[in-house]
Image 1: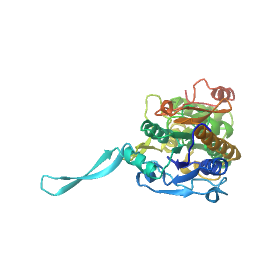
Image 2: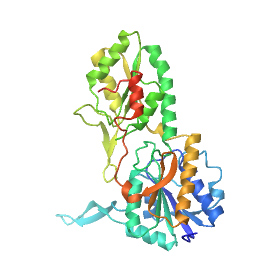
Image 3: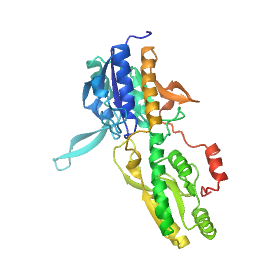
Image 4: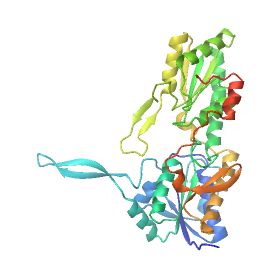
Length: 373
C-alpha cells in the first residue's frame, strides 16, 4: 500500500441524484472490509462540513441502500465554503444596527473540522459546483477524490456520470405516456426536461421516446422552423407532435427562460418555463392545440437503473483504490469504457456539452427529427 490512510470522510453535494447511495455504499464497504479504514459521513454536503455535522458510518449503515434513491447523507446545493453567506450587522445613519449579508471564506474552518476528526482524505460525490469546491480544498492541502454525479451528464472529463441513465429512463417513460394523450386529443405536446447548458437528457430521451422535435442549448432554434415542421407533420396526416425541450434551450438571438433568481446561491439562476412559453407560441402560430409538461424534479427521483447502480459502485470502488495507492486530488472518470481519473483542477468550472457533430444528432436527423435550425 503506497499511502496509509486510517480515516476518510464522504459527502454528497449539489442536487440529489439516483445512485448516490450506491457510491456511499461502495466507498464505505470497500474502506471498512478491504482496507480497515474508518469512515465518517458528512451531512448535507458542504453545509454539513461548514456546520461541523459529521457522523461515523458503519458497514451496517450502508447495507440495503444500493437500490435506494436520493442520499442517506442528505445534500445541499446552495452552500459554498469559499463564498458562504453570513449576516453582518453594521451601524445605520440613525444609530440602529442594519443587517447586511456578506460572502465569507470559511474553507479554513472546514479544513480544521476534518483535522479535528483526524480525517486523512475526503471523497466528494457531486457535479461541477461540488468538484470546483473540492479542487479549492485540495489547494489547501486536503487529500481529495471526486466522484462525478449529475443527471445532466455535463461534467467535464468523463464520458458519463451516474444518475444520467435513470433520468433518461424516467423522461423517456414520461414521453411514452404523453404520446398516448397527445394522439387521442390531436395535440402538440411540449415536454420540458432538465439541462441548463447541455442537452444530453433532451437528446437521449427525445430519441428514445421518438420525439418529433428536440431542442437543446447547443443548437439555438428558430420558432418558425419548429412551427413549419409541426404543420408539415399535420399535412402528412400526423395528428399530433411531441416536442422535447431542454430547460436551457433558447431561440436564435434569444435568452434562456429564467424562473427565478436565488441570491447568494452558487447557481443563482433557476431555469424553467420554456415549455409553457413554447406551447403558447406554437398554438398561436399554427392554430393547433398545444400543451406543456415540465418533468422537473421527477427526473432526480426514484430507484437507480441497473446501469447506474453498476457505474456508481465502480466509481466508489475506484475512488478508494486511488486513495490507498497514494493518488489524490483527482476525479474518477469513465473514458472509452474504462475507469480512469483526471486532475480536479482541470474539471473545475467546465461543462461538457453535446458536440454539434454528435453521431446521435446525425442519427436523429436521419429519421427526420427537427432541431429547429
